[in-house]
Image 1 (cartoon, rainbow, N blue to C red):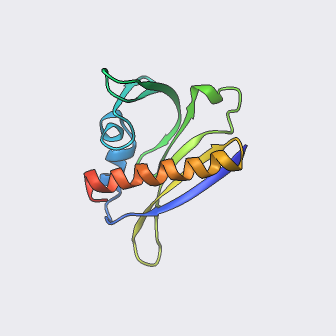
Image 2 (tube, rainbow, N blue to C red):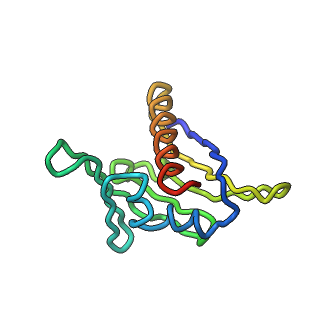
Length: 132
C-alpha cells in the first residue's frame, strides 16, 4: 500500500463550514457521491443514478474529532485497517487560512495517479457547490 497525502487550500476561514461538508451524509452527498447515507458507524456512498450503472461502496467511520478530522475505512480494505482514508482540516498558523488534507491509500503507482485525479475532481466539485 502506498500512502497518499494531498493538501487543498480552501477559501474560507470557518472550520464549521468545512466540517459540515465533510462530516455527515448530507454534506458529503453534495460533492463526494451522488447519494450518501449514514447508519450508525457506516456510511454508504453511491455513484450513478437509478437508471444508469451504479457503484456502491461502504465505509466504516473509525474516528471523528469535531472541526478537525474524520477517518474512515472502505469495506474492501477491512483486512488492511491501516489503509484508511481521512479528511482533515488544517489551519495555517501564519495566515489562519484553512486547507483540507486528504489521506488515502493506493495499491500501486498507477492507482496512486488515478486516486489523485479522483480527489482533484472531488475537490473541484466541493469548490463548485460550496465556494470553499
